[in-house]
Image (cartoon, rainbow, N blue to C red; front, side, top):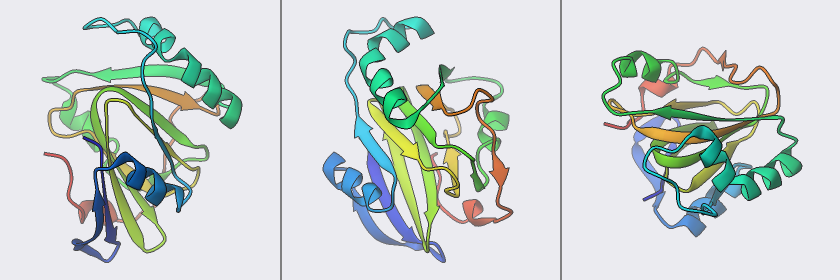
Length: 180
C-alpha cells in the first residue's frame, strides 16, 4: 500500500502528516509540485516479463507522459531479492542529491521509498506496484530500496545520459527512517 509521511526537516521523529489514501497522497504532493498517479497495465504480465513486454503493457501511459514532459528515453530497471550487490546499490542512492531533469519512476512491481526535501519538510513517499512519481528537477531527495530490494520500475529521462546525480552535501538523509 502506498504511503506518505511528512516531517519537519529538523525534527525527523515528529510526524506532521500520514496517509495511505491515493487521493490524499496525490493532493499533498501536488501542492509542492510533485506528480503522483497510479497506472494499470493494459494486459497481464507474465511472472518474469521481458523489458519489451513491460514497456508494451504500459505503452499508453508512457506515450502520454513523453508528450507531456518531453521525455526522450525510457527504460526498465529491475532488482531481485538476494542480489549480492544490494548493499552497494542501496548506498548509491542514500544521499541527498538533485538532478537537472525530472526523476520519473513507475513501479511495475515491488517498492521503493522516495524522500523529498522540499522547503522545511521531508516528504517520504513509499511507492509500490502501480505508483508513478515524478520528482521535479533540482528537488533535493534520496531514495531507499531497502536492505533486500525487489522491484521493477520504468524510468523516463529528458536526456539521453540517464541518471546523473548532483550531491547537495547535506547529511539529512542519515536522520530519517528508511525501509527495513
